[in-house]
Image 1 (tube, rainbow, N blue to C red):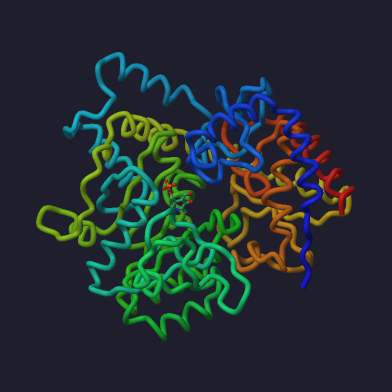
Image 2 (image 1 turned 180 degrees about the horizontal axis):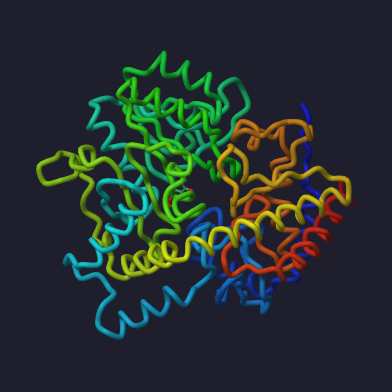
Length: 463
Ligand SMILES: Cc1ncc(COP(=O)(O)O)c(C=O)c1O
């Protein structure tokens, strides 16, 4: 089966990158003395070394080497208003000046104010806050297992729900028959690996088969209605409706992991745009306004298991309900609710133009590239995208089984080559592109055109 190896090109790009970012290279060597691989999040630790950032404003970051870089990573897709937007930084500045902000260990009114906005925008009955998306998905699974008295957890192969026990199964593509039915970490109890049932995104038939086989044992089905790390692909409407029906019939809790999707496509959850209500939804990224805040929201009867009279330890967390995070969250959620009619059409339209520009840049040199992010019959204004390079232009990429399969798509090109080639043009992307924020503007399109055009020519010359 077809695959391409871009080793030589990557080597050449890395040499040029070293020359262009010498200070970042020096600081990376320094960091290696105390930090594993020089940092604390693998995705940020670009090979051969990451650009070291000095400051970040709006659409751009400035690095220690002096370059100003147009950024489409935007804080792991969290910064829908760009880096350090005034609506958040001014609220935090005023709070700190008034003696509010760091953890106190008490409950302040901000917590219920933020919960009120969240519940009213998402249609969820109750919410509990925590500090990361990983913890939110873990708690949502604990709640489901306790509520149903069942053990099995169903997830999507290639779906990322953070580094928590059940989320660490079925992430990476493996050659063989069941591409994702494996644990992707050492140190995980075998029981957890065995409890996780992996199914295929947007495959209604497989979903029905799995429910026939495991339905009475499934505590929950956790999925992203817009799969992020698995290829930036929206679920088909029929798929989500089937998931809802099958969960209902089998007494299985339906969890939408909207850590990426929540407040990305409108000021609420994506489930609302599909007309499909999950039992629980997990939220983080955008809702934190650039601060570490996450939430599990959903049915009161399930979340009540976390109460004093319940038996699920969705508790603890010295920094959970952190005042500064809640303030950032409330400011962000309020801003997005009040400006929904301008924010989402703006980033949606700009993203459409950028996708078009990227695809054209590759087409101009005879490379077929497709930007993901739209489709599913329900996402007219998607502001998030990856780039995939299917070997067969007619191949529909419906989920991670396609986008992460190196025999279907040129995965190395999309993930590593494009990123390094674009950094040489002062543009930073993730999985080929990333997310568009309100700080991006029309003028960025010309920059995108030039940068992708030059990167595409360089790639073409090496094929
Ligand atoms: C869909 C999804 N769920 C959960 C997580 C984990 O969130 P966090 O990184 O805040 O722990 C992520 C992180 O990227 C994610 O994309």
